Image 1 (cartoon, rainbow, N blue to C red):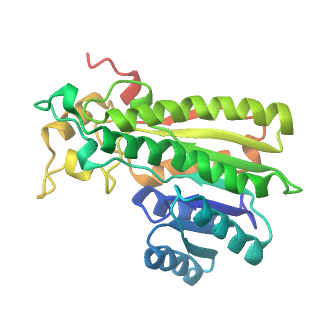
Image 2: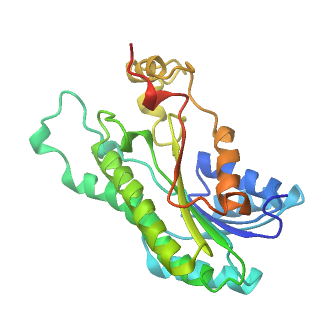
Length: 268
């Protein structure tokens, strides 16, 4: 029970990866605060954990609306009195921001590009600002885990906005971690997880057809992944629990790659 009685906030907790994160935290004794825009889904997921004997709360909030996050922060404090960890799992891309090979590079939808940048970058920065103010008052240690992407390390076509944002997340993680280390001496830490290709609500149509077969892009991803498959959401759990727990007390500004070898393989 590495997270016993620790109160952990999971933004994007109503997504596919978020669902796996919630379950993993609850299994390790953590109290899960599930944040998502869909109130019904957030509450359903919290109730599922409660029915299994865990502790959780579902809260509707948009990670880009500070007032929503402040309200969530207050609800968590009223119910549990503290926050021990934050998982910045909100993110994804938009169909309008996907740049196809036949598209003109100089007439791309900059509005959609900006939306994706905001969601994936400021959708992590803003929750950190709001929940971090509470975490720094915690008498024990606290941990923040960001979600990076292999697109921050190597070029993945079509998803420019997502790639720009995740590259910024890598820099943000390291910059903020240094400041946390200097100012709080390990009381609050920030690290990141770098998933490879996992089927999510945002990328499923890019990687698979309606009948479940792989698209051309999906086949290329598998060919570039030495383990010859997509990842399962549960395969991120061990790294997440490690970074949230005191087992990683001397780990700061690091990114753990969980990509089946995608970023190390040249394709030859």
